[in-house]
Amino acid sequence: MKGSCLCESVTFEVDKERLSLYQCHCSLCRKQSGTFSNAATIVSEQSYRITSGEDCISKWKKNTGFSSNFCARCGSPVPNRLQNTEYFWIPAGLLEDVGEMRIESHLFIGSKASWEQASSNAKTHEEFPGIEAHIAFLNSRNQ
Ligand SMILES: [Zn+2]
Ligand SMILES: [Zn+2]
Image 1: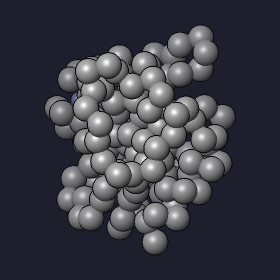
Image 2: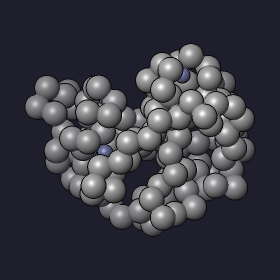
Image 3: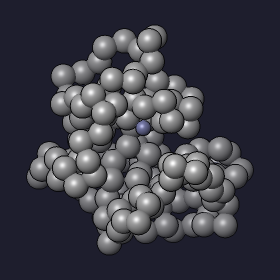
Image 4: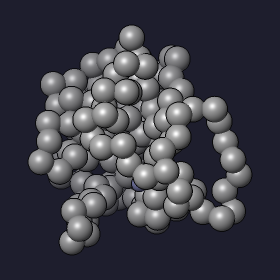
C-alpha cells in the first residue's frame, strides 16, 4: 500500500494488504488534525518504508512527548515513529488504494469535542488502553 502527502513530496509504502484503523479524539489530535479526531493506524518498522521526501519533513514535539511530523511544503501530517518504539503511526488519509479498511476503535472518547456527533459502532475507550493492548487489538482485526 502506498501513501503520500498533499503535495506528494513525502511518499511511503506499507507492506500490508489490510490495515485496521482507529480514531483518536484527544485534544492534541484535535489540534494536530484541525478537526474532531485523527484517523490512523500503527505498523511495525519492518512494514514501513519512506520512499521520498525525508528532507521535507518538519518535526514538532511537545514537552510531554507528543510529537507531530508534517510536510514542510503542504502541511499534511506524515508518518511518525511512536516514541521509543519500533512502530510507526500512519495517518489514514495519506493512504491510497486502500481496499477494505475501516475504523475498528475510538480512543479518548472521554475528551471528544462537544460539537462532535456520536459515530460508529467500533470499540470505544474513554482514554487510552495502553500501547501493547491497542496494537494487539488492531492486529487482531486485520487477519
Ligand atoms: Zn507535502
Ligand atoms: Zn490523540
